[in-house]
Image (cartoon, rainbow, N blue to C red; front, top):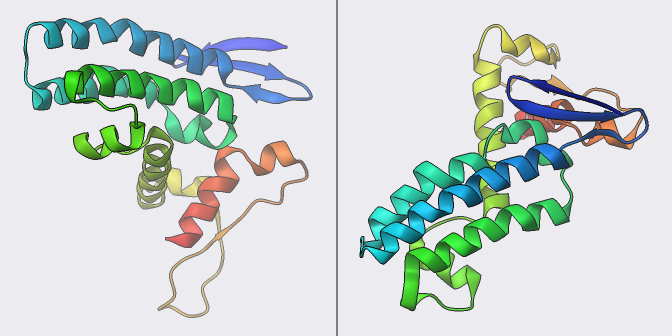
Length: 179
């Protein structure tokens, strides 16, 4: 097992299991949970729900969405639940007495998306930006276009292992082809 940090991202590499994002995601969740005191304190002071929502999105949720395109495709359901639990707690703080036990209803009231849906959206947005950038566009191998009117397609890398097939590059290539 090899552990290293590159540009603030903790990589835990295992020769058989591949890269594990658990350490990095738990670190991001811990940062977000530490910032929740701001939300609690503002709610105690009587700040309005729209302002609490703005505080959540700008101060807390950003920690849960750091480097999403890198790790989104390979996390397990348990880590996804841990991440979602932070947003669930924040919705209860923001809504206060108006909160219901139904998390989906609370999200609808606040007009928020589930974080797993948001990660999908962020990955699509990242893929769109990647293919427009002249340097990053070379990350993918492009198919020759016989018909100029058809959208350019990316060759999905041939994955010999399930681990590589579920990693960022093949998944981003699939997203680009579906745009």
